[in-house]
Length: 131
Image (cartoon, rainbow, N blue to C red; front, side, top):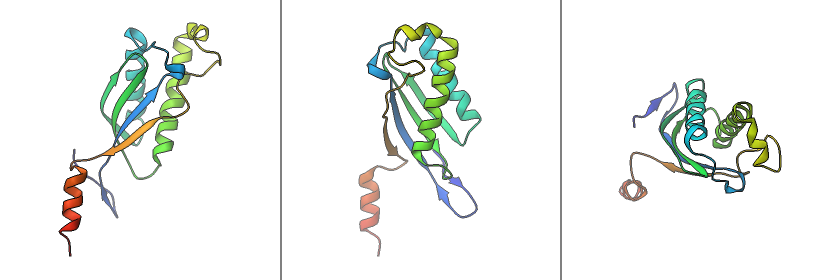
C-alpha cells in the first residue's frame, strides 16, 4: 500500500474492520452477501476511504480499508453500517421476520485494528534505533 500525501501530512491508515450481523444470524450468503459487498464498494467510491479487500462469512464481514485523516474511525464505521442497513432493508424486506427490531441489521459494536506496511516489531525496532 502506498502512502497518501496531503498539504501538511503523509499517512497510511489501513484498518481491518469486522462487522457482525445482529444476534449473529447466519444470513450473509449468496445474494445478500454479494449485495453487501457491492454496497460497501459503492459507499467507498463516493467517500474518503478505499476498500482493499472484502470478504463475507455467514454472520459477519471482514474488510481491509484505507481511510483518510478527515474523519474518525467511528464515523467511517457509522456511515458503512447506516447505509448498508438502509439499502438491505429496502432490497430485502423479508428480513423483518429475522429480527426483533425493524431496521436493525448489524450488532451495536465492531472490531477494528490498524495495519500497515510494517509490522509492530519493525516499528518498535526503528524507534529504538533513533537518537
